[in-house]
Length: 348
Image 1: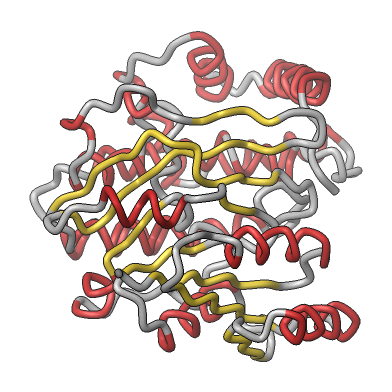
Image 2 (image 1 turned 180 degrees about the vertical axis):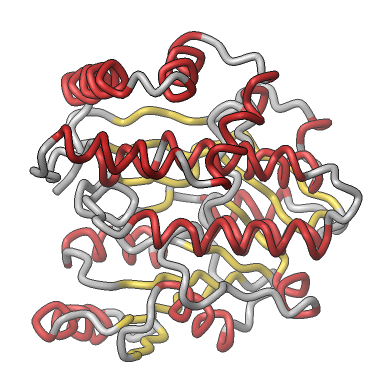
């Protein structure tokens, strides 16, 4: 029986969420598994709760470290993992019953990563994100690396860059010394996956909903971040370093510019300039965004999108950014935020 190592980094996660996560793992009918829980310096009250949970379930391999970030926490888990396969699970998420036995049953010797589907979990509904009839030609390391830098509509709901939703042969990680890059606050998972895919032989996809991604408004993926530009520019530098190291033929240069543009019109607007918790004056924010648009790297990114066949709202956003129609851009994005809030409710 193949051994599976499940690595769960935790930092100030609600104890109820973590309990659901832990119990979804320990209740799996696949017997040969290890749960490695890495506490990345959570506050004292929550740490006490985590320790109590581990006393309740002594089979957990519990590691405490001073707060160093999720990259270091995941690396600490990798350093002690002993499984044939590795899975990453975020501490506020959970996995489906029978997932481990199913994945070990369908995993083939030639595969290094088996991707699988997930569900997005809100307080008022859960949305299934599963590719029903996956096209095998889309599941190659090169195609998936390209999708990390420029989302591929043909892949649909697949979260390519996230560490979760993947059943990974541990030998590929260890033999190639692949680790998460410390110091990156966002995008460290996609940088890790880019490097991991670089060393994979074959990958595939299993059309099951095996992972439940809880959308929490206070998570780093959704909360207000006043320094998001500085944070993401470190990540963009890491993408650039990867392309320069491995893609020297120029085939990824345009994709890299597309990633810059996606961050410019995505994370920057959603997590800072137009986040509901940003109470700064809108006129001042638009002036700040206009200054950002004047930087060479972002000017080049916007220019590179001129020959991309954008559709619908994407095309409209591009025209507004290109022509500096920022008042209209603000109104459009605000209406999109309101519409999302009507349809789904995040966890707190």
